[in-house]
Image (cartoon, rainbow, N blue to C red):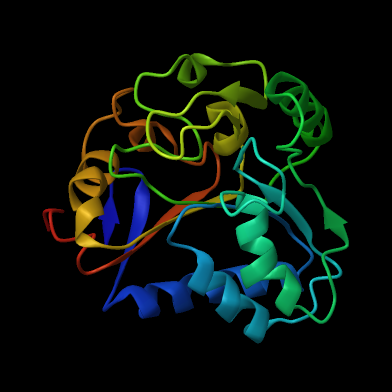
Length: 230
């Protein structure tokens, strides 16, 4: 099934969706790809399963799509989530680990990450979707949606946790060879319908993010897909 400029996979439930994503992550790690992870409440189970499927990530590069500006051991840290659910479960750590330094000044952390990204093509970018339609830390109608030069920028949140962020820009996300949305739960159904089935709209940042010359895949559970039209 396809929605606007993306392939759609609707899994039976949240666990099945996590398994689908875990398989893609494990495959990319095994092949030594450059992988950008996401944060939020949804991907943890997929990370656990990916570590089981492929415990050796030594040939892979790992990046992040965004980060909350907190220390890495803070419960709100996206890196911290990945460490608990993925990295600590691996037998061999990623050969190239590119953490956003959320403990630093946001502008400095963004500038450093922008420099790190230069010359790198991300092979797989995993994204969630907020109930307001945001992706990474690109929030509705935010100035960062118009950024065309930089690859990483500081950002302010529109919802909890209300801490400064560093996020990849639309330019960085769109340059990926494959973008994978993982979205579950009925509370995301309206955002899914707008981001995947509607027209591009800065009020719904997810509607603006598609792989420019690659593949965009949306993996949903039945509840998240419930408002999409056949």
